[in-house]
Image 1 (cartoon, rainbow, N blue to C red):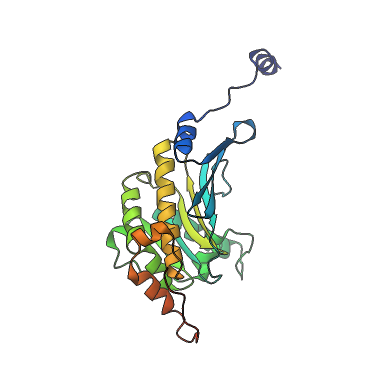
Image 2: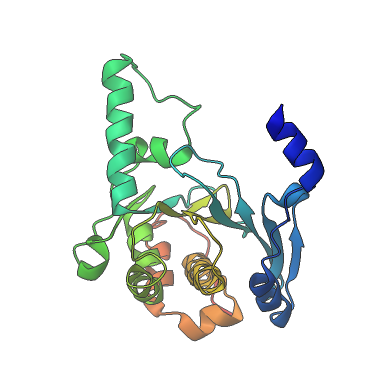
Length: 250
């Protein structure tokens, strides 16, 4: 009762402003808005002509504590281009949890109520990161096709993730980068949205998007700047029986 009176006379708690994030978004011509009751914020932007959305607020995954940063973008990727990269501690945690669910619960099939991040660890082969020595120490990956997963992660994205490992991912928070149902996603634990970390996460996401599009023969202006020929070659090699010519890079 006493606490109720205190809240009544003190008024509502101040709403976070995140002025530095809003200022950063404004300088990039991005649309920033706070969500109801100060739970977080949403930023909408575009990469070339393709829209993306960033959200920071309560987590949507049980493996993330506190607050979560997530970014998604519709790319219309092929439905079978399913790739997943996770921070190494998170991959170990989800593999252990999946194993425990199967052994203790006597499950005989994959539980479709589990998030894709867990189901894919069972469904898809691991991407062989032996050629990406700096990457494999901090991350793990699976993909519907190993060649596509390796092509996606090689080159510019590998360099960006290596830099992130000594930057905004230095403490190895839960971190996910994936392509699913034609979209690209980034998801990570972020207790407070420091503007440098938000900007760095978006930069990694943009490179991941560009590399994913290169696998399909599509391109963004940034993909043309970052791209390497091995990516599109690897994707084309996955469909040797396809009689049609694969789309060319523009």
